[in-house]
Length: 385
Image 1 (tube, rainbow, N blue to C red):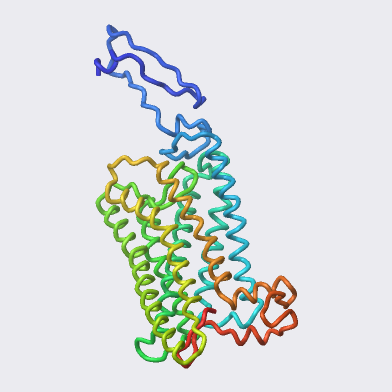
Image 2 (cartoon, one colour; image 1 turned 90 degrees about the vertical axis):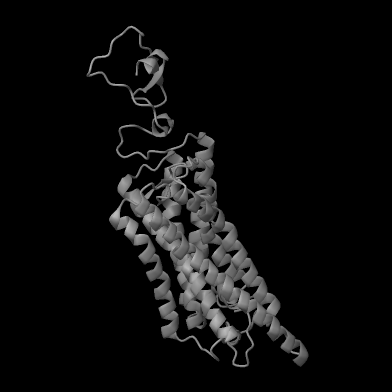
């Protein structure tokens, strides 16, 4: 203790977090038993945007320039507007046009709902927290935000996996011709939400399993856990909530592409038009976008859960975390852009029931929409919806 005091200066944080005074000990001064050594300032004490004494403050807020927080706040504003708008359009079009309310589209709408709620909650809160430089809403709301955002994100991922599995059964017919009815489609939606609830709820009940991440402006599962039981759970969470859905997506769409190639060969021999190219394009873009957005964040989170003492910077994790949030935008873009049925209905919704760009012309009726079905054709032909 004496050698540490002889070293000279030890920082003490004043009531103003921007000012740090220093004091020195005389080497000859003796310490009484009641003397206390000042604590080393933490990130939350040095962050220039945190107001001390305002209640709960995250413990690991990183120092960043005001420009960084401002740029993220602007980014989250655009994400909030685009995510809620794009997914809201998909939901509204499904409500308006009966042709879209078929069983195979249930899971597409469910994906839009999960992305809409995620963009609404996280986008709205992140605008203000990044503008302030830290999560100032308090610990309880931080835990709640981390829980619901993880719930919606896992539900979206599960929806893509269920969608892939449904398309595999319908198109590849591993057990013969299968038609997905309303009950089976509703069961798929239920499984997507139930699986997400199952893996995200235990940390909320058993321990404070959600905390600020990155620059301290958003909340997520507590990846930096040291307790063996919590670490084991986070590893299982990664495997069952991320790797298994990813494996289902990869397997199902891999089989789908192979089947579509076979259908394309049969179509070329019969002289009919093959839908393989358009469907394959949609599949490749969706899977690539998913992996691009989520794999960096999932890898970083899993590394922290396995190696909690690695002392990796929280600010480093902010980059993949905020990048992954863009997933709520690309899903509706893919399904509206590459799905003829959804695209046609969305256009008609904005042009009073007309589609100026339709091949049939502006005077075509909604009967043309009814004829462009999504996936199932009894002759083993499948077209992009």
